[in-house]
Figure 1 (tube, rainbow over the protein chains, first blue to last red):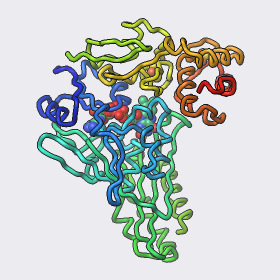
Figure 2 (spheres, chains in turn green, blue):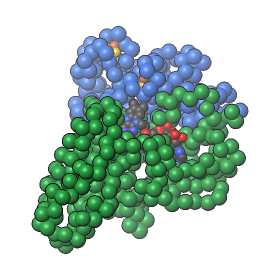
Figure 3 (cartoon, rainbow over the protein chains, first blue to last red):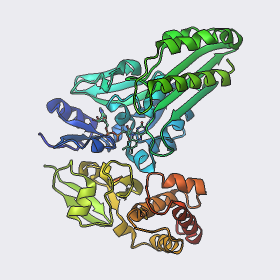
Length: 273
Length: 157
Ligand SMILES: Cc1cc2nc3c(=O)[nH]c(=O)nc-3n(C[C@H](O)[C@H](O)[C@H](O)COP(=O)(O)OP(=O)(O)OC[C@H]3O[C@@H](n4cnc5c(N)ncnc54)[C@H](O)[C@@H]3O)c2cc1C
Ligand code: FES
Ligand code: FES
């Protein structure tokens, strides 16, 4: 046990993480403190201003890894679909400390901000003394509770596109109203270009070991008009039904499948498909 | 071991122990602030809530290393304020306290809410205390007490 450290800036944090790779990055602590590890050595990152804040730069929105959910909810730059998800995370006290880095830091498929990041093709920036890597979120999540992060690296930034889709639908199914961990979460985004579908993004959270998104299936509808897409709708939905292997958890895999397909169909219908 | 400095209920303090210690335990055991209650240590009940830099936070989910330079207010510190008196009176008049275990957290959740939104709707009050569990009152009395305090404390928040 090397003990815990409070670095004064990012450089010091990266130096420490390189020297003592066993240091556990600590952001808001809302997951770590529940895990209740024995004699942990933490690297406290939550107050590093270089890793906080939200910026808009040519068509993109950069979210500092240590930004809290409350800070994001107060920001005029954060897209509404992200806010829809954030406002349903836990309760005020947890949103006041919980961060974007911490939400993806343990690779959970139940992480509500991660679902939005999946749907938007977010890029995760990780840094170490060796330099920086920018990883598309779908590559960042390797498997159940497993992310692409080397032992000397920390997450420093999340970048999402500043898009204003024609239609989106976000749904979270939890066990109760407040403090509910997602049992099923859904995000559908539809972007049109004149009368044709420019992009369609469909993601499911909390139903499998990783967040589910099938870009090859999405391609089926790209470039079509809504009328043409309607004709392919059954085939599109079936592709999801056939492919999705859902985990048995607090709710059965069968129930999960029914609800996910219903959410997908509703999204298509409300989006005019 | 690094030292950390913070303000607790208006007083400068130094902590030299293990930075991974839980703020909740330090407040209760080292500072004897037993108005900070421990109900779950999992972030589920809000009984351990304090204000950190004016924001509501569950002290069971905070390690000491995270509060270097912060200002912490527990119910013991908040008790000295005019705002507390208004909340205290409203809670008493509307029987919003039964066993009292949730009350410190509820009162601080109310303070955090009212300082950001002095005239909340009933729904906003319910969201404000959504992380605080109460086994006794059924919540309505607490919600009404906070609405009453918001009216009677006009100008204080
Ligand atoms: C009662 C309760 C309700 C909850 N409800 C929800 C909910 O509805 N939706 C939801 O998505 N989550 C929920 N959570 C989980 C948790 O609050 C979130 O996942 C939160 O985003 C974690 O962020 P944090 O900053 O507190 O993480 P921490 O606890 O600080 O860290 C979490 C993990 O990420 C790692 N990590 C942190 N920062 C970095 C970094 N910069 N680089 C690399 N790794 C890092 C840590 O080492 C750790 O493994 C809930 C938790 C509780 C206790
Ligand atoms: S003891 Fe902290 S939330 Fe229950
Ligand atoms: S009064 Fe007993 S828990 Fe609220």
